[in-house]
Length: 114
Image (cartoon, rainbow, N blue to C red; front, side, top):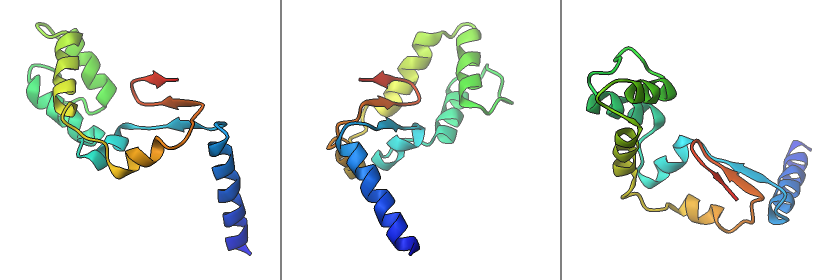
């Protein structure tokens, strides 16, 4: 019985996705299947590249804000560093599967895509 309920739920969700009625939320981990760093690893990489920031911080957003607020660094340097770490990534099979659906919107940790 539980399997039937799960199967029916999956069919209903799939139908909603196929009709473009579902929003996709992706976190930093979505790039991990393509070889990208986890959020934790990227945070550590930023701390290593910008050694004069507060090394006791562990939250990604807090680390990024500290880089921006700590001279001589600025937002452009931070963005350039992150882009350089991600620019060589290629979509994984999971990414290709996601493109087969007409999402009503896609939210990621840094962008809104319509």
